[in-house]
Amino acid sequence: MLRIAVPNKGSLSETAAQMLSEAGYTGRRDPRDLVVADPLNDVEFFYLRPRDIATYVGSGALDVGITGRDLLLDSRSPATEIASLDFGDSTFRFAGPAGRFTDLADLSGLRVATSYPGLVEAFLATHNVAVNLVTLDGAVESAVQLGVADAVADVVSTGSTLRKAGLDIFGPVILQSTAVLITSDNEKPGIATLLRRLQGVLVARQYVLMDYDIPASLLDDACLLAPGIESPTVSSLHDPDWVAVRVMIPRLNTNHVMDALYELGARAILISSIHNARL
View (spheres, rainbow, N blue to C red):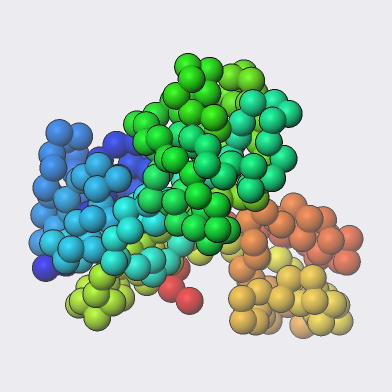
């Protein structure tokens, strides 16, 4: 039975659970449940703190897990990332009092507050910058104002929280993080199936099915506008001068492609959602 670690709370929890459900797995119904068996799929789910998942998977206690790339790197676990899951995106940057820092080297010998000491220490080591790390559990933007640190390293979205604390972002990006699937044993039975199912969910979220009718004489031009994953499916119609086409297109391009095909001469253009896929 494949043992899967899933975030029990936080920004990754809800989307991870939804993604597993869309992949055909049965998760917990009661948020208080810590262990849930899914015998139909021969898996068992363990709901854990996101920060602990890399440790459990890296030790071999659990076979595979969903966590953040930032948490994986910060843990220094031997577990490895096997797939990006494209949710829970975050960016890590340095910030300090407005106008004080311009370069990473300016931090040398100073105090830097962060909730990710392993991640930040490893990054600074690659740039040959030595600092005194101050480990906090959260709200690191207050560390400078309270005199605990000279600068901070934290998650940045818009930067508004840091600016309110009188801090400016500087230096290179520490990490672009996202939710990832991790393991310490790629050969474990069941991981390939799990990965294939999750990738099917990602495809379903990123693509839609487009159906349209078009004069056969314009088919080649239409296929240039919407070539599909491999090649469009083309079917004959009762009118021999027309054909029906089905093709997968990126969800974000839907209306642009529809407009271009309509202007070319396509009609009866329909869009359908994809619930899951295997490519």
